[in-house]
Length: 398
Ligand code: TYD
Ligand code: ZN
Image (cartoon, rainbow, N blue to C red; front, top):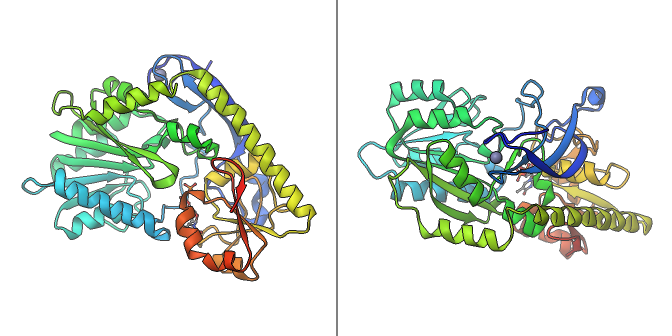
């Protein structure tokens, strides 16, 4: 039986996507024999209600060389990280000689903005690929001790789209205990289970997302690791996230937003297995609808291409059985993905220039979390008669 990674109680499984590849391992044509697959299934802890993957990819299999996140590919994400930095500069980083640390660091936009304002900053990231001053390590007590000895305690430790992928959170919290100043805060943001359920955005479930947080589960997790959840904020980015602020116990008055969110979660039944079972039924419906639509359009002779070789699209394509016979290619701005194949589904990835050469009849928007930005940028596609296919919150054409 699987046990909760945080509190060790049994996990109740509610959905099985079966055999799935690593979402960021884009093989070359000659590398298909080496692809690694694992069982992608999700469940909820009977005790702390934390939703999590049943099986995680073993660390030696994880795709560490990956694709360092490029916020630069999205102007919306760049602005988001700049605004995050400005908020910290106005609230948490106002003392004498403040210090801000980011775990994971994305491509350094948040830290660079702090740096430009004269604030000491450091990325903690094993690959070092951040574009800012970096300590190359996984964040744990050892790394935190070295950083504290060199730079002193941190006023803010921040992590975006990182904590939900850390299988073992204990070392992270041990590190926080070492590094955070007495009144320091740990701020992290990740996809929100409430939003995934509301939008049936099941493609948020893939190897690198191990945890699907709720305010309730994060509150319990914070207690367990010796911290306190003192604030939450909903974020519109990446299909709906929550930013959690944790402090040392008793140091801050929890904001009313925490209690409000707990009430809303209870009203929506987020801690009840039956809610997740209903979600599972909607997932199958979306798959059936999407597959039927794509086959119908192809039978009518329509040309359909994919837009955005996201990690999310790995679950979507593999679970739905969408391959190159339905979608001849997917275009993406990431040079390291171009010329390769999508994981498991083996759809060729081409530069975005291929999109207009010539425009297809339909574009399946795998990068739906950037819908507004992409549709604005690709206005000419619709003007030329093209249509977007979306599958969140249900299958529809715009
Ligand atoms: P991302 O938002 O990180 O989603 P995931 O976490 O599921 O991978 O990925 C967005 C992908 O879409 C990335 O590969 C870059 C690509 N992209 C474009 O091709 N064009 C664009 O305009 C944007 C914003 C993204
Ligand atoms: Zn638990």
